[in-house]
Length: 220
Image (tube, rainbow, N blue to C red; front, side, top):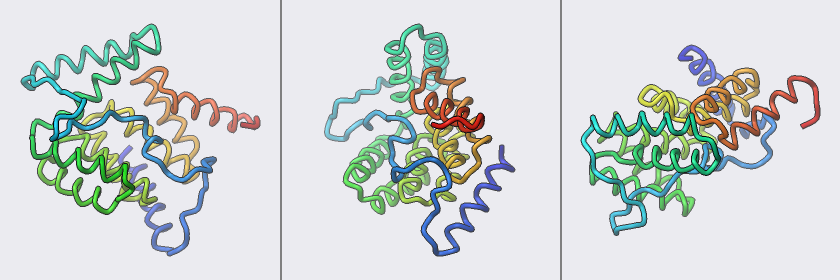
């Protein structure tokens, strides 16, 4: 995986250095979007927003996370899967630092306002203050992707997956970049990895179907 990511980084860097528009080598026709990486819940707000993350000690949180992943894998309905996924995402958002939570919330609002430069400034501080916080790296990867800075996005995706290998958003992001850069076989494998973690993940399911049809020479 690491060798392949480095190969992708080299290709993405070559595209950027060429000073030409990033070529759309894959089947995507829409510009990059945060939704490509799969929907994410709102960050806890310093003003007392809707999202509330219960405080738990690390051991309890780890046990809770394992149970939720088991629930996600064994979910019998899409609704049950979505509930488990939502709870996992909320745990991922719990940085354990009030300062980082505030920075994440402000970065989220900056992304919604399409102020990507401000979002990156805030997320740079997040990963500096909390380098073991996987969601900080994932959010920064998403912003880099939306700016079509694929090389930088790949670096942050690799860091996210090193900290949380089951992060289906980061796996989907990696697969989308692989597909966009023309590595369709690798993208198919990565999308399937995301589905192993989150069966029924909509964007991954559709992408797997499309890529398998393309491989068989069928129209998508």
